[in-house]
Image (cartoon, rainbow, N blue to C red; front, side, top):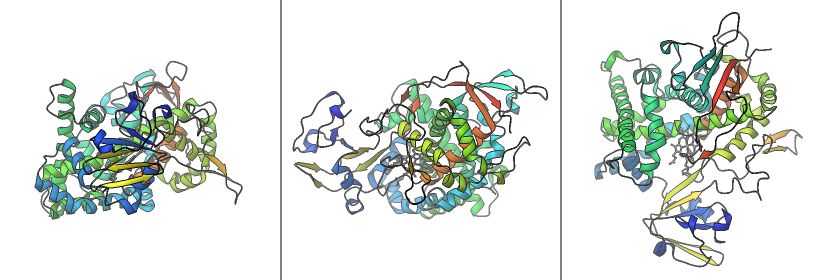
Length: 493
Ligand code: HEM
């Protein structure tokens, strides 16, 4: 990569196939739409610095473009005004639930993670007895589970892990009734994520006459329909009116209830509420569960690591053969604070699997002086700060393609104990628009990951771990193909 990058640290969008000599230039005259600013660039710091935010507003054009182009809202001056008036207030409850340490810990504590993980696979042969997350995993019973023999089931690992994550976390935001009422929702969500999100991001119109787009847009519509119907019920609930289907509203999160109040205040239609919250459902699920999949894949496939992590986490997760384990037996705060090897493995997973970028819209012209270079950024341009370009740079990370569990471990000079430090990694983006769900996401990976590796043994169905190649995803890379694995209950000490 660095051979393609000129010394000024700025890579033009289409320069992957060209070499551009460094020098002073006017970006706008050459590249009308976008540039990629590299991690190492001075420009990076300037664009993401708080003092320059008026040149690169974090919401404004970009978020409105996402709402209309990607999540399907109709572009009208009226919607633009509503969004301008409400986006800060719509974000606030999300930050309280997903960004604050207290909110994220409380949310995870509500999730019954251990008890759900104890039925990660049920060994059921009939789909009506399976857990929802098992349905997409192409399960095959290798050995039935019985009092005399331990069951073995074969499954597609990415599918089961990401749907497990989604089934645990979506109800935290929207309540259990939401998923129960929308059996198709997970399949539609991943179809949208896999096919439609990237195409809409690069500007393919939703009417383009291709089957993939037609099916993906239909999936997108069904997801937005489900969220719209939810916000109708929330509205009825908040007005004290009879609720459609007499649905249970007792476990809807404060975040969704508070967002509803903002939607009402600014007169968003129910359709617009469905599309506005689709963006949040997407943020909550699109990256965290693929990340959980890579983390668990590295844990199970790296020789000796599973045993080390089970030992490190054992004091904070009490599991026994009693099924299901009580939820109080997992201390997520202690797992986050006292397990440096696991933290280092999570950072190493970020390094290998994230593709984070901070996209900013240039609202006001700005000239950036960067040593001998001078960059003219003009209104209407989009800047994409690609945080991941250095993550596999051999001059920074030795053996950059290898998963090295203790890569981020250091000895704390004060205590003499090992600590994990993320260093220059930026999986959550940077600046004011940095990920609003990062605290929750990391705790989720810790809690769900620990629950699964504490309770289950997982081996490759082929007999040898062969990790699939990675392709760019939304913010986390995707495997080119799923991994078939065999899952058995761990015989607990
Ligand atoms: C491993 C999981 C996740 C990764 C890797 C990730 C990554 C990112 C990145 C790279 C950005 C762009 C930041 C920037 O522009 O500088 C972002 C934005 C955002 N993320 Fe996440 N995210 C994750 C999980 C979550 C979760 C669980 C939520 C919960 C709702 C969430 C909500 C958001 C929101 C609302 C934004 C937009 C922030 C803004 O525009 O101010 N993310 N995320």
